[in-house]
Image 1 (cartoon, rainbow, N blue to C red):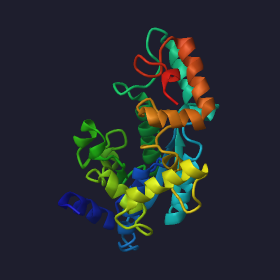
Image 2 (image 1 turned 90 degrees about the vertical axis):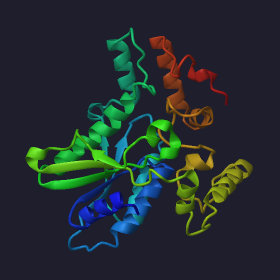
Image 3 (image 1 turned 90 degrees about the horizontal axis):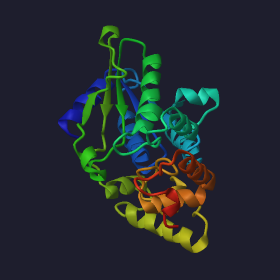
Length: 287
């Protein structure tokens, strides 16, 4: 633990609250377990609250993601909250929002992209910030833990260990909220070693590959496997079932296992005239 994290833990020990964002993916699973282990060692009389929170990208996520997040909350015996974009309360989902953008701005691509990640800002960060403002109206310090890793991309490697979350902070109400990236330095191997620490210490990736090979051979996930099924199917990362930023392998898995999402994307490609991927239709993804 570096000096920066030591300071954060000293705040949590004195009453700052810890809110852990979970997606159902390996990084947030790893982060949840690590942080809960450390939080459990603090004095219950003085420590802040520990909660999980999941931002639901309704109609576009793997259907297994939310149940897996609930299982993690049960495993850790902590509360979990689910938030969503305001349109979900009106019976709309993520692809309905894409269609709305297409109708309102027919001259612009309706899809999220690496240059304009409105899916993250509108469907994840925004709803979580709103929840924080409502749950902690005043007189609180909150650390919002996010499972980003520097190894994943050059942009993430430049992220600070922590920073003020401006959309949730209100100094006039004595509410300070910080984004915290506690596993920023973790490698892929570190993550799977942590997740399989009880069954295969220091051989986490090897055990994951065994589970993937088992699925390929048998056509079913081994009963001892307890993480998101998409990894057993061969995914490298888990976000939305058909994430615009996913590699071709992960997109192919999403298309295979969630054909309804795929078909709606194809329909919207035709209606809008814009391809889901840069200069490439999702129908061109090799399966």
